[in-house]
Image (cartoon, rainbow, N blue to C red; front, side, top):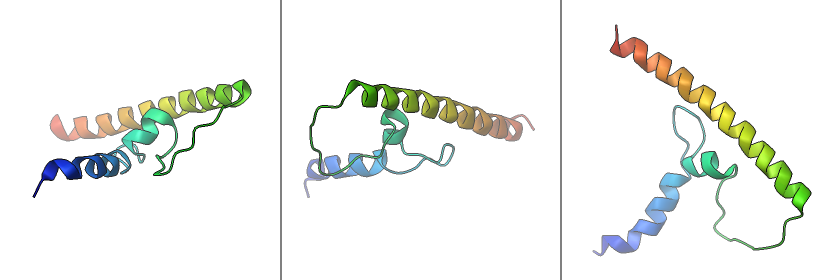
Length: 80
């Protein structure tokens, strides 16, 4: 049993599993989309890249708000 051979799929699975506090996966939180097993590299027009960057900024703000809400809920239990 060489567990090292299993690390790539384990990492992929972990990074693609939604987190309970945010409802999105770590990969989605970082990139703004879920990973694909098959990747194709292509040129992206600058207006598309700009839209992706705007969407990612909005996603990060949404996640920040969700994490703050979760932290407040956890804090009530800790300080009760």
